[in-house]
Length: 263
Ligand code: HBI
Ligand code: FE
Image 1 (cartoon, rainbow, N blue to C red):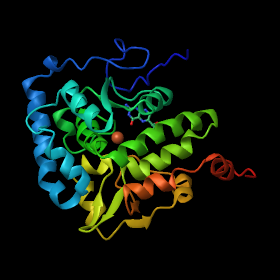
Image 2: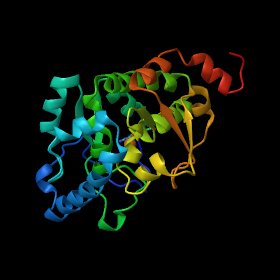
Image 3: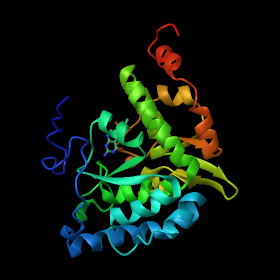
Image 4: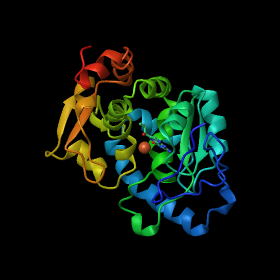
């Protein structure tokens, strides 16, 4: 088995992680200050999401009772298992691609246990529990989105064998992290990086500056992304069914083409 040396800059305690990188959430160890910070993050986003989040996300968060304190993953997992067969698995932070994809391919979504510092209220580079939970978990209650993410996990393991994770990661970035969706109410956000952001959520939906392009798989896979500023380009899907349908084909010839090989 490959050993994983976390980037020395990565936060989180990897020393107690199981081989699949799971840890205990140890909910009792969160401090009152952490619950308070989480509550403030939640309250800020709660003012924005009615106008900017997609309906599926809004419907799901209502059933989660996640506004008061950092949620207990076990309780949410019980609920989620019933609805879509998914569960949450606690992780120390970013984990290697193979571990990440393997969890998704088993309908387990890795959620970081630690919360950002108060000084990072507006911006954080790495995913923390607020981003992972608030941004990603509600949509796991949507059957089509949940099925897509399961397929993505399987596609990730395949992309590793084909040495093409770079291309697949771009798809994830422009959809699961920063995706927009066309709805009857106009364009809304479903990407977790948007839903958990104090500034970019409104920007992505409303600001005239960024480009909002229709779904184009190869274009996404060709496009490098910036992790440290608002996106210049967003991809707008028509529906989660479209996302599922357009990502169903075998990507092997596309990867070959992108590498400049003959398909
Ligand atoms: N680990 N915890 C965590 N969360 C992620 O979103 C994540 C990860 N490891 C790898 C990874 N994402 C990406 O490289 C893949 O989506 C491509
Ligand atoms: Fe994320």
